[in-house]
Length: 123
Image 1 (tube, one colour):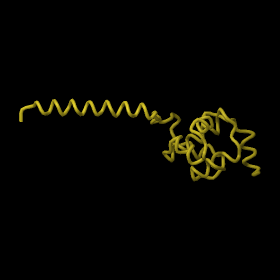
Image 2 (tube, one colour; image 1 turned 180 degrees about the vertical axis):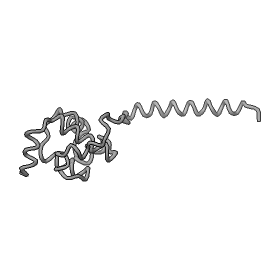
Image 3 (spheres, rainbow, N blue to C red; image 1 turned 90 degrees about the vertical axis):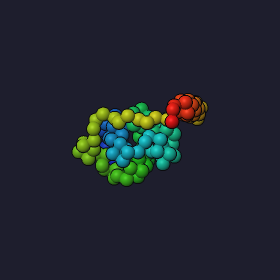
Image 4 (cartoon, rainbow, N blue to C red; image 1 turned 180 degrees about the horizontal axis):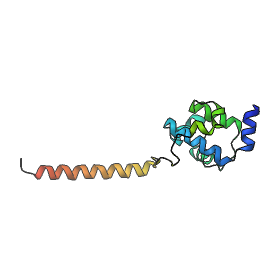
């Protein structure tokens, strides 16, 4: 195990490195869903990493660094990510298939109503 990476995991709180990971992800404009998919884990598992709710192994840290195309050592340097805004960008979120179908049906109904209104207007 790399001594620097080991010291990082010992002396850096989970919250600190999880925030750095989030900042790097936001710099790349990657979603949590994308990160989870590339790492072969669930979205929930990845979210727990970024929230500092799960222990981050050196293996996972190296996976994250690989997806983000950064060196593990970059997670150690506060200045590397210091230029990223502290506030999180709003998530686009995700919906279930059923919720999407409901919204698509609502849009279709609105299109039909608009067509009906337009057809009644004088030419």
